[in-house]
Length: 242
Ligand code: ADP
Image 1 (cartoon, helix red, strand yellow):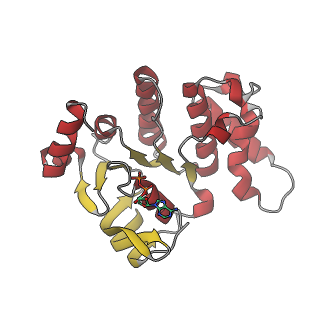
Image 2 (tube, protein in one colour):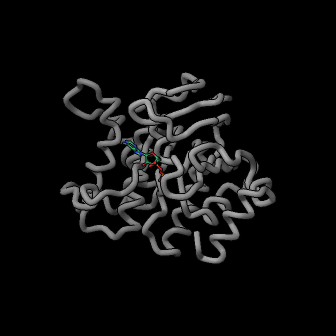
């Protein structure tokens, strides 16, 4: 089922376009990796998909399955998040805030979803721990559990592996792989870890979208490796210049 389609979409701030010519689509159960250098428009695209900024041109069509309040969003890690003075379970449960609406309390269903998400990310035993005392890798898993708890079907992740050591990064990609493959959860992920992102997208349902203020490439990981932007960008990373 088609989840979202962009046709010649432009996005920007205060009427100034920073991203243009976007024409791609995402189907349910796919994993889309959005890559590009700093300032290429990756976070802007996520904000646009979330409906946080109106298109400046073109069309963005979203299926009813892609509603902002049912989307799990993992933003880039901020200092404020690191110091969040709450227990892990509360942090995960807060992912249900959008669904809670005007109800003053979380329901049993909300709490069950939070427990399930913690279990899915192998951090069930951390429920009572203080969030700010966790390691970087544990914090990322907990925030991913929070996003999952909000979404259940759909995840938008902004640089989920940034700042983690390579072993923890590998664990995180494996986890995302099983969430997508086994649970059928659609993943849209922004990353400047191009090698990691391309490996992650190397499945039947994987797609790469390469941005540079416009769309340089959209297609499978295999096609990307053969394309001009793919060769150029992957080559750069291998040489350690990217
Ligand atoms: P990336 O996520 O790939 O690093 P961004 O989407 O953050 O790129 O930025 C794309 C462009 O939009 C950059 O030129 C950046 O300066 C500009 N930009 C980002 N956020 C804002 C904002 N809030 N107001 C105005 N310009 C912005």
